[in-house]
Length: 250
Image (cartoon, rainbow, N blue to C red):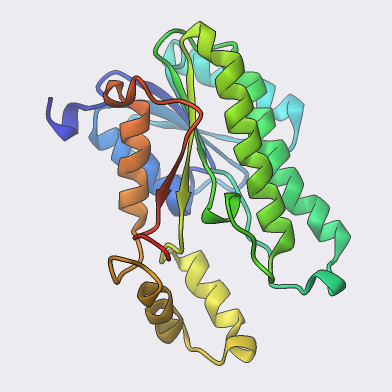
């Protein structure tokens, strides 16, 4: 089977698919033959040809319930879910943490994943998949973004627990853990940290690259291809796992 036929006929729902990694996933899946629906709070109208998009706040249960039902109606069912919706907060020392912002980050990155799993799991049958875009901060801490690390640890707990619950029904649940990915959002965050790090964006990216075994940071396309693998039958024996896509951060 060629890579471009890997997901032929798969009916896919992608949260957070309007921008960033989620948008790259939607485009890559379309290239591989999948049909899908993108759910996002701010839609762009730039989805792959033949794909649909619906406005959704992943924190809101009623919104998610309705969007999943409409997605299944539009596609004639669902075979795969990619939970890519997420937010990265600004740097804060734990002692100066804004707890309202902490709640916001947990609501999007953890509650949003739980909400997605809850309302899609009943639509998925044998051979279906859920893949969560987690983070290297699912397995390690960060002194500057405690809320983000907490939310991504929680997301991994959701993945591992859902894998146990849904496995008997033939549904696999996994996560990918990107390291720094040079999206526009990351470049903007690095620029905002200049007064703390003293590093212009290009230098910050070079520093991140030096911290990897490959000597470069991974790309959004590589994350999308890993998710495609986890969605495909090539990974039929894999569930409850976190797959690092980070260039070998050490």
